[in-house]
Image (cartoon, rainbow, N blue to C red):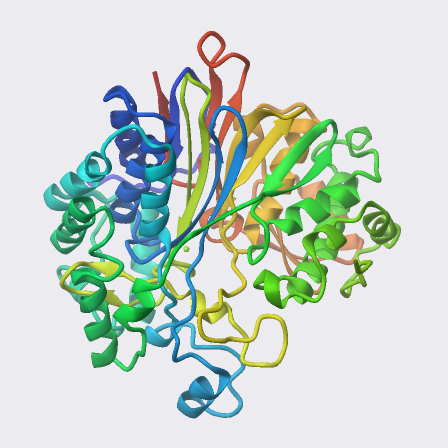
Length: 536
């Protein structure tokens, strides 16, 4: 039977209730994490195993050349991990202008000159060493098996794979790795990635040392040199992820935690701080007033985020100054409930991604995200080890300012995990993947849960909007037509989009219902991906 795999109907998922949970955007990734829990591992072991498997089963979004971030509740306190990569030592504005012209504004979008040192593998190792229970090599086993034996392509992954082919097929190593028959695999077709299995074994055997100074680093240096890049094994050898203190903002009696800059998580905190000045719950949940208010708050948040956020040492203001109560109250006063506006940045008082989450019955919760950026990232794939390399260097600027490229510097980053607590105790690990959709998704889903009492799966399934720039927003086709019309009448330039994967991200949620041993967790997985929440 040749099925039509497009579903003409709205699909509703139900929440999962369990004491031990893993939720990812691909079932095999979730199952990889669950295997570790059944083996006696904790939520950290599960998250690492799931992350490794996701590099194989969702290569359109991440790979062994990804960056990563994590928020981790160890049972007593919350920890942050910044696994974003640093620029090669050769990178300066002059380096790029000599190669790409005096008018170049950023490093290129694709190719080896978009690649910073990937931080995901180092993040797995750091998490395992500090909080894991099982041997690190065990955590790589599911991913190795999947890469060796292969897996059948699911619907959403296949659609995005095929869509990326035209742009990326000429990038070094892409066709060899991801176009096995000269084309993208079809839905239900077997895809094997034996080169990546080789890398995963080396990573497992050396606890990541092969990647940061061993055979894999040397292979990437050689591959880069052959294809016009300048990243070296020495750049890899000096790389370490950084444990950081999360930043936070209270909202409706809860506290939302985000990774501090160089990431954009602060945008969600700013938007919530602005919304705190309004009675959101008094507005109809899917009505035009509620949606307009949230859009305008998000615009204000992005205006400051895009101006000020960079590597912390390069920022003109601190995160604390950007989150100052009085400053956010003053920003809230700029909102006109009857008219959309194009806001500029204020003056704070001076003084393609996968997301997964795991939680266990001992109370450990992990909010983890890793990404190649813009789909397949740079499009470059080192062939011996199947390292699909990110393109995070494109996030740098070549112009003077906080985010100007420099050797060893980290660029402005889009991927952000989130964590919710109340009175110092954990409540929810969650995230919504998708470029600048991420803080927007954090805010929209949290407002639905905290202001309107929607359960995590309902908040995840609800129609979303996405702010782009200026007055332009996208809305999902499922949004109420009266609300869409009302937004248009207030001056928003609205485009209705049918492809929810492309524009509106996808979330994974684990809400702690009480004592994990007796009351467990409520988990949700976004229907905009092929994913699944699993547990026992």
